[in-house]
Length: 215
Figure 1 (cartoon, helix red, strand yellow):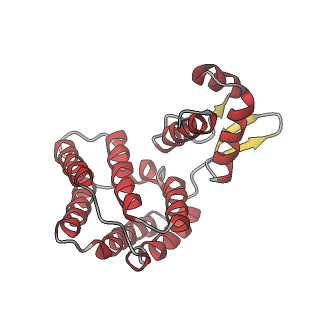
Figure 2: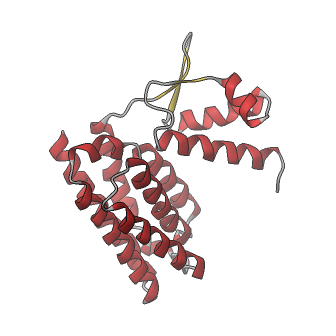
């Protein structure tokens, strides 16, 4: 369980989250040597991790420049959101898994963080809550290919919020996120997991409307 493959998976998830939360900003160069030293691994498994992140569209290897975090293209992200909307609609039809008691507690925690953040704007906090909610959607998707594609597309679009939030009303955005969390929890409470995908779909659709306004 704690072998090289597991360790590589941990590094991949950590780097992906750093990119998502703009710890590594678009255009920033990521140095293999520094990462290998930080994580205590050789550069060979690290290159496999970086290759996976490149396949995800999050970084790009440039000859003579090293590994660079990709830029945020709002038009391209809008196209990905369109696909995410269609995928969300299929969650209910794919035989979703029942939520756990831990999932209910996690949703309560995310909701509390939203309430606390209403008067304390912090884009990183928004990103962390968004990731937490994404994991709740992921945990009920039984279909493995659907789960993997959903995960990949989420991280491709997640950085968009850092472009979008400064141009919107913070309270409106955090309240919309809180509304989505509460709607998901309500579906879980009444045993209607199939409807979770449509909750997700409706909120993704609202995001596309915001992108249209920006574009």
